[in-house]
Length: 35
Image (tube, rainbow, N blue to C red; front, top):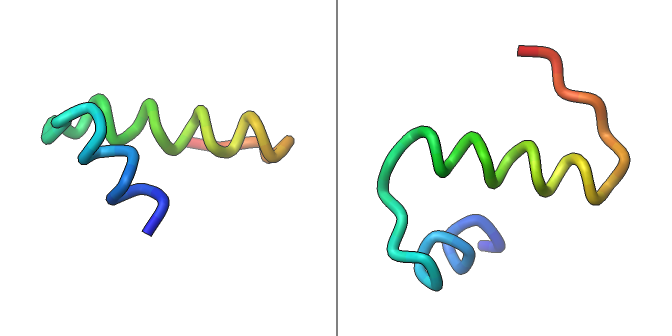
């Protein structure tokens, strides 16, 4: 739900922006992402 709201507010549809959301959200939660 949070991701959908984030996309809606920015009108983002690209995978790159989706990845940015994941890294940003994880960063705020102190989670390390391994690609």
